[in-house]
Length: 259
Image (spheres, one colour):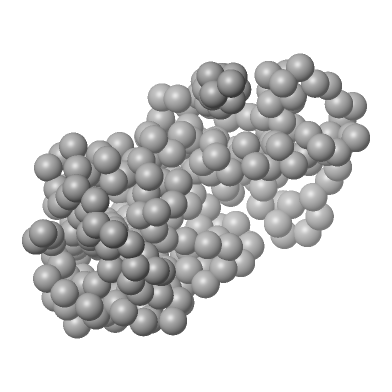
């Protein structure tokens, strides 16, 4: 199979939505994976380690466009530097990167690494497209599930999110990947803004649970950044269509349908 498109992070949550959309758009895809996998219709796999830089030259052989979805709690800056170096050697002509809203404003290591990755790509000399998105519903669900296990629901003052559905992000990324390099494009957030406590209460209601609420104050620079809304884009972000309530209803219905 001949393909000119490499996807990193193609086996993750977002990749699981992106790959079928790329196939529906008529694109054959090569996916960078940490271990060898058998090919699927329209999808081949190349083994490589982005953090160590191993296997990247072979994975990028013949590739024109890279959709960089791979990310983790740390090391995204190192991963991007390794990918950019290999992409330059391979003559890649377009890198599409998914980042996070607030990458340059929220004083946390995860955001700093994302911003460093943005800069590495933008300064590489390779034409690029960067999309910043809000926190996914999937991450919000993990946080809400964890908080719901506590006897008292923490309510961090001023902590607001704009959770976006990963399928909405996948739709936008496919548009950008099959299009021309566009630099940094408009951010993508969810259709609603809510406090983390309200998002967790919605989760509890769907599951027929209640918890008393304990207001807490986030200290220091991080707390100030969140209270100031540095993790939000209330003005210029494009908005997804699927709400947190829609997502919760779907996820609640899935286990019931499986029984």
